[in-house]
Amino acid sequence: MSAIAVTLINGRPGDQVSTRERALHYGDGLFETISCRGGRPRWLALHLQRLRRGCGRLQLPFDDYEELAGEITQLAAWQPCCIVKVIVSRGPATRRGYAPDGTERPTRIVTRHEWPRDAHETGLHVGVSAVRLGANALLAGLKHLNRLEQVLAQLQRPAGIEEVLMLSGAQQVIGGSMSNVFFADAGGLFTPDLRDCGVEGVMRRVVLEAAAASRGAASVPGGALAGGLALTVRPVAAAELAGVREAFMTNVRWGVRSVAMLDGRALPGDDYARQLRRLIEDDDAGT
Image (cartoon, rainbow, N blue to C red; front, top):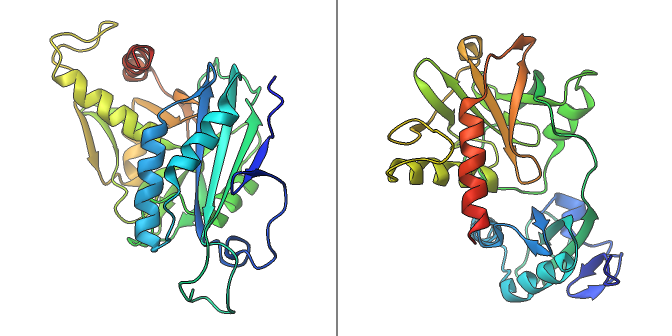
């Protein structure tokens, strides 16, 4: 194991932030969870793109992306597998109240964590959470620090259920409490539209890009359907879950993980998940 610091705060080893930190008072910031293998962060450019997009949306004046990328790479170095988490906040408040005055200096926190040791050999058992997600197009897609809905969903998660689907107030499926979700039915493969709420996960983007690339290839590794994988992004009503024949969840730790049980019902197959795993592994091996 490497002897470098497990946590860097603004580039320096440490474990304390100011009591005026706006991330603590208001959740005023963003985070990224980065999978690292073989001593390097995976899909780092996509993580930084999402972070940059979020900072723009929140009008958070962070621009130390080169330093941040170096710190992520530093913490990943020499680690066979680890997770690096990044938090970027607006920084310590310079006055009381919700409104920043523009003189704040952003805080960046980069922390390395051991790779979780939970087994992923079998399919997930997934339920539907009673906790609903609030719709807010201004925050939709962002991985912001306000995660109380997901905390409540996890607190209410039944024993034996490894992940829960979360719906909007309009009874639309959005995603898992810590993942994005993809479904297949008689009409093909689809994933929820996240224009009103939910997180646009990096692994979700990797899957969307892999599916799109497969349609431009003459053949797809692993025996995928001729012509590639057609994948639709659209609103998904909760009532559609009864007709789903395959589902899989994605995040950067799980990759593409099949769902074995969905709301108490066994799903018959995971063909799409297996094809996408092959596509993504082949692409990642070449980078």
